Length: 228
Image (cartoon, rainbow, N blue to C red; front, top):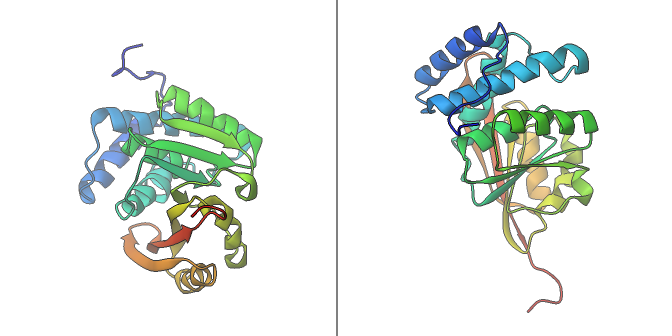
């Protein structure tokens, strides 16, 4: 298959999705190539097909998906500086991991989830989207290999954010970025500071269909024992 040619079997809703995505990208000045837009449309088509059986997301219409998932992630990723690799903890249906992989094709994106059906979906979607920078991992945050950049859009009780600490135990400096509502933001920031993260910062943005949202970031520094 040619590198610029993605599968053409899109759902009947794909035209509406593509139109809504185009409008959202223009409104928020987010530059994506035609290939990147088609990759996201391929993801949405598969999501629609799988959602009918596996209940991967509650946002099912093209407009809901564009604004509730894809745009929310793209607006948040404006405040994240990728390195060579990132780990998406609780990747679910590929949010934000697969969107990040589309946006940053040279970054290795590790998608971690404890639910096997979601891992199978993300692997299937990554192949259909022709993403060769995605690695799917079935497991939990407590036992995964750490990463320099950890992101998550999964819903965590504030007191359970400590499970992410294991993901940040890379020797040296690691960063964490979380999608939260502004109502959650004060408690999340306090918890990150309790966890020992430094440079905790909030980047707020107005989500047109989801109210006030924010990316909360923090930095962790880990010194490996026995290393001088």
